[in-house]
Length: 467
Image (cartoon, rainbow, N blue to C red; front, side, top):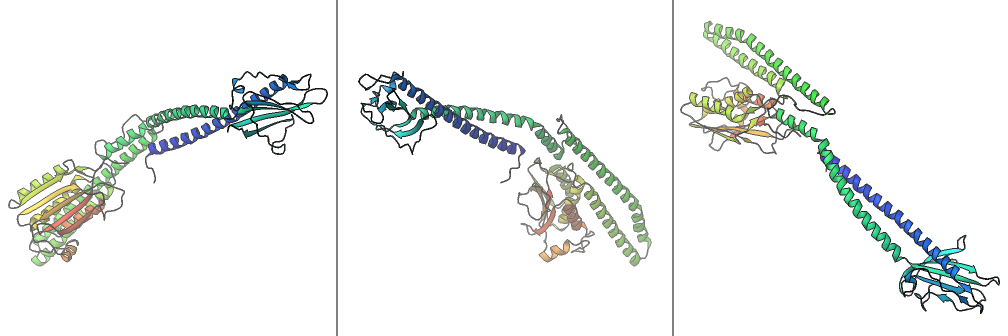
């Protein structure tokens, strides 16, 4: 699963790295300490071994004599794993000397092949004593007199001492590293959140722009983000100038065409009826076509602007209020949910699309028309894939005769009128379709719950989620 949050990515990477680093450091320190403890343990046994050698001699009767005092009570306590043994070698025979801790027990001795002597004629190996203790043995052989009589010296130490020492050290080390790691993660998290806080400010500023509450990125941004904020502001200013220029050109074109079309319509009235009717119908069609393409050009110039925003409720209330005055015999209902619903399009475009649908509904309704505006679900299908996740659903339905599926397809064609007895040019629904398509939305026609026509518009909504 891909993580989209920059903060989460940095926190995850620092957490993983810190955890791996601390684990490796802990294992490395623990291993080094174990080696040091084992080396120190072996040095202790070697020192004790030579203390025993220096304490033992051959008496006048040819017997081994001496009482080594190693300064450790464990050599006097039984079954501790701390022993010393002095045994005669060769043809020289006498009773061996043993520590009180060993008593009459024996220490297993491996062959020289299994545990060879080193260059100092010493060897070290581990065995298990009669009490089940794992012991480290330091052994050497020494000639004790001028007659060549020699003895084998062995000193043992309990390996559990080293294991306990390493275990205690590792436990303390891991606790310390865990505390250090948790503290470091907290500090890193705070540092990352503090360091990325300007990005949150930039995001909040973009949300205000998208919501129509601001026209520029405003704030005290750090040096790394300031160029981006300046570029975004420059882009917004450029977009605004393009929109204004397009609107001005559209207005100029509309003004320049208005007079010639009006002249044609006036001239049509004085011509013969057959010719005049033809000229008038063609002039009206031309007027509708020009207005439609002007609208498309204007919408195309500004539809990508993040500043396009219209509050649905007041705009729709004005339309319904006008329709009630023009159609006193028809009841108009308005439902907007939630009340703060906003549409990401220009107000005049929203009023033109919904106005055309209301006029069409009022023309064919028997007594009732309902206009509703609600938030569309997140699974809206059939709209252009623009990455937008927020949509508004506008619906206009009446209690008129309605349309069959084949009639709906025919009605959406430009200039087609299914009922010639009703006034109009037949351009209303096609204009609504074109405007909604320019805003990446769509128009749907179906039969409503009252039996009449239901026109549903899916239009882009305003959302504060700009991530």
